[in-house]
Length: 456
Ligand SMILES: *Cc1c(COP(=O)(O)O)cnc(C)c1O
Image (tube, rainbow, N blue to C red; front, side):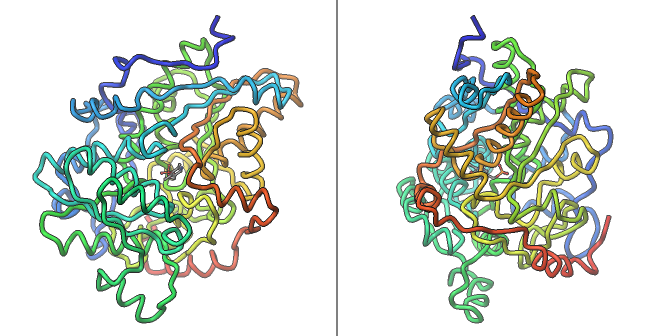
């Protein structure tokens, strides 16, 4: 009986044949992306130096379904469909009437959901004659995924890795190098922007915004090179929808409809990947579950940021996008959930939040590790520090259901494993975990940099 099952597994044949494009179902389009120089909406020609044309087309497409190319679907076979689990043991530990499900993306080769977009990005570039990709990575998950995808489709990969992570996570670097990528700490001496930062501050620990600036500079100064990114952009969210499309089928196998969907949100891609296919069903008249994005208190763009135009990077090289932002100069404290340390948020996720179609909550680092350890002891999987944010809220929801004496079906995205994050767990277990509160003064300061930019 479905009620007794722990794993809901789909056959390889059930890997989706198309990604789901939420633009087709949104009642109004997202605000346009603006050129940083002219302030006018950008066109395909502005993006062409950075991305292959197929990806640019996906950003402007209004088609509900965008076909997944055969070679990408074949590479997905290495780890898709990913399993959906019913957390029977966590339910028991919490003594809750709620049913808790999680979609597990940590079984991919690089350990997170990121290959879902790294593989198509590498494929389309290779198809259009690109030989080398440049990118940035914070915690190392994205760099690992793109290095794997580069190996899969025969492309060189250069990764600018935020200095603090480069020093804290040597094994992520070794994984990328094993796949054949070149990795440098950012700020680096390899770009003019990196050299200018190092000249002023030789000990700069780096930031994602700074590493993006370096990767873009590398791209436009190296022939045959294009830029890849692991979050925020619409086509990244599109590729991640394989998660939710599979989950809809798997929940049907379980014979249940989720009442609440939960994902952690850094740039918004794993959250969107799980939730957009469900949101789309709701927009087309189907069931409308509550949907919650969870972010760190230390980088609270959705819960404490402003919704207006900002740059995606520190050097103001990216287009201007309307999003929830803390300001492009904001450098979050070095929380262990490195993938959630970003000043902005996907424009699509931001719009949905602004329209009240999704909720957002912020969680403190200590509470998320507590939830992660409780989850590991019940379910066995050691979560990455990022999805412990989703786990924290899933547990809160289950405890609320218990207090109310009500059933509740909860589904969250377990978007990566934490095997490269053991030093963070060690700090938590030994009582040495850092306490970072909401950085109100720093946010107020960083938001000043938005003066003079279009409001939208
Ligand atoms: C990159 C990453 C994130 C944050 O990025 P999103 O685009 O918000 O998903 C979260 N969790 C893991 C495991 C990651 O690798």
